[in-house]
Image 1 (spheres, rainbow, N blue to C red):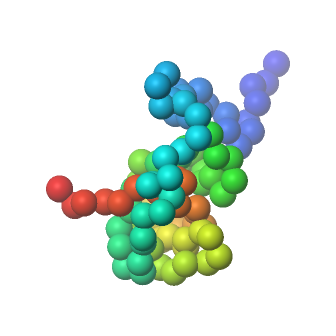
Image 2 (cartoon, rainbow, N blue to C red):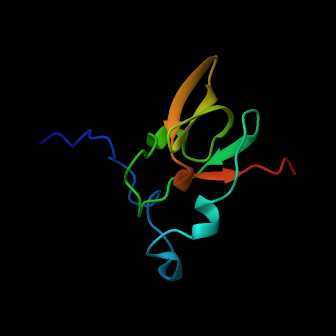
Length: 98
């Protein structure tokens, strides 16, 4: 029998949260101001399914192009191509550049 090849296949460990981090997202994370040109880390939050990016973008660093409604348009390099995705701030973290 063939295995499922759905949108979230192979994400058992990727979308799992630590025990004490389960539940609703922190409000400070949602209210963080992002502007065009900022760099962000795409980190999927499994407690919010709306506007969740594809699993291949988890952990990638992208640049904000614009704000579109509640979400942001982000350009993410993938190999030689540059992909444009639309993600809500639930799934974003500011990138400090270390």
